[in-house]
Length: 476
Ligand SMILES: Nc1ncnc2c1ncn2[C@@H]1O[C@H](COP(=O)(O)OP(=O)(O)OP(=O)(O)O)[C@@H](O)[C@H]1O
Ligand SMILES: [Mg+2]
Image (cartoon, rainbow, N blue to C red; front, top):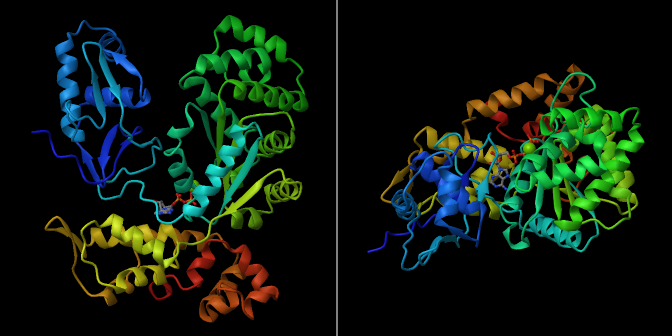
């Protein structure tokens, strides 16, 4: 009898080399994981036994039996069968074909704890639609720049990652990913762009990208010396000598346009509130050019941080938006319905009290990071426990309401410490006055309309969530 397929969603955590089923890491030997990874990276393709042996055991002579054993292990774990395959199809005598869908996540920071849930996305249907719409437009050759914005922990990265796991239907894409870093001082020019280019050059089809940069954007390739031979590096250095910033920008824009002629490109630049100024020039140039490019640029940033630091990204964004050259996608907090759906998925088969979702929503104001932190804290405390194939609640709802997870307390306190004494004072007053002063009331209200206090409070960013009622009691 074929093994029972797991009823919960499975996904592949590439950075940590684990296969997850809901919040359970499934046991796989390293080579078996490598085989799965290889199969997933070649969806729908016939992979001959010889190709698989060569890819997985390049240095060793291994018989086909070894491969068959690994395939059997994989099928067992995936709940798959050779007779009625959902993931791995046998191609008679030749080899195998991966026919399933297994989302992959490659962020090293994700899901290192067995208690933490995998990428469970609450809400965000509209935002995913916007992202898919932008990609569909980009595929027609009309370049797109989209800024996903919101305070810390509102789910910018999570949304982008959820989007990345749903791109299979678009066929092959170049995907480049660059991260801005929090630093003191000016920060290295073009850091996230170079990181994204480096990843493209090292990823599948990377040789093509290197060749293209060598020909059309030597001023960029020369900054990634690890990607070229020593002899070629000297030539590149000669060709790039005396290059101005304008020339660099022009080279990059042309190279990316050529790159997207053979395959669309999705470039993700994360945490632009920390970006160096040169990276902003790249964004502006790429967004403004009119040449066709199957390019989707996704930037994420914390709006409150940008406002608070007076970062020029704010101006760049608005200038581009005024000319229809970019789209803003501000993330709202989660609705109570989304929180309810989250709890249902996080605790399958649970018999949770009706008021729990409302309580979570109220206490966290639908802030995703607070929601996930609170819920996982309850699991850790043993208030929500697996039982009889589902989950059950131990303890009173009132106790849930009065506890602030330690990690969250520390995070909020750190954010509060960063504020000036004046801002802390305004926040303190705001926490007493609540939503009125902070203008967080739905549809506005007297407090939402203005005054000096409100202008200041708006700049406080994430910390305003504290005063807006989130665990006010616990932090006091
Ligand atoms: N829509 C969502 N559904 C469920 N969980 C979410 C959602 N959005 C975010 N989370 C959870 O909240 C946490 C913070 O989310 P995320 O890292 O995406 O925020 P962010 O906006 O990128 O924050 P930062 O500005 O610090 O980078 C993550 O642990 C994630 O699991
Ligand atoms: Mg993020």
